[in-house]
Length: 282
Image (cartoon, rainbow, N blue to C red; front, side):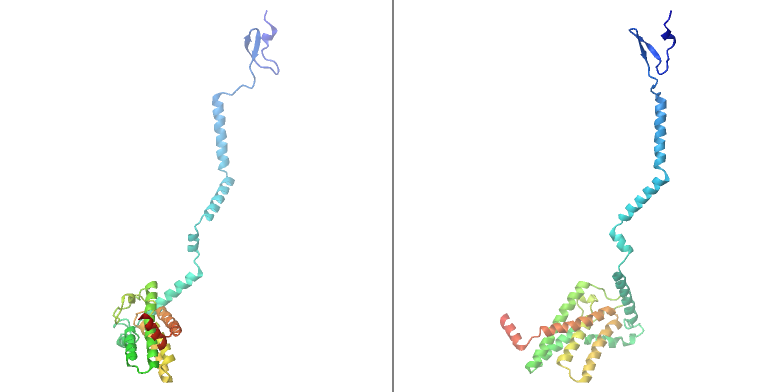
């Protein structure tokens, strides 16, 4: 007759009977492991839920803001400077444009076909009057013909001032290397290699320096002083009318020549100083 326990395999809180071993019952837990296809399905559902959470609007907004902030902070400083140019750069560019435009408008004697081409020979004569070679030759002749010591002293310092002007203007032209205006014709008298550059105007520096020198040491009469001033101004104006220089080249040349005279006064050579210098060289 079978045991009553074999007829009731399940009890409240118990587990189903799997079998007996050595007269002892073995039970299987009710919390059994789900089948493999259920585990795979649950894993795919969890992955889908995570992807949807990552693609939520809040997450997208956060990532967009962080990317924007990173890109804003990572912008190169050079690009920021190009987008926001300095006031000084804008002012210099505007002045350069005005300088080129005004120089082209004033170059009315640049060639024979220009509006004032008929007075071009006169402008070229004024150009020669401010050239360095006539001044050097004339000053050397005055030194040779002078009878007084005072006259030789003045002419000697003028000769040294002309040499100083040539050296300083050549250094500045070779350093800046600004080209001459495009409407210029290179038919100047006795040019050198640095004369293909425009800044500053050597005629303007020489006119300003020699004008101050003549007014301080040679010319005393009022009409002659006015003529010296008119000559210096006309030499500078002829450089622009002939198309040789821009306006800024002439203006800077006048300022440079004015300052060169102060340097000449500081380095003034007296006859005694010259004789001592020549004695040391011998």
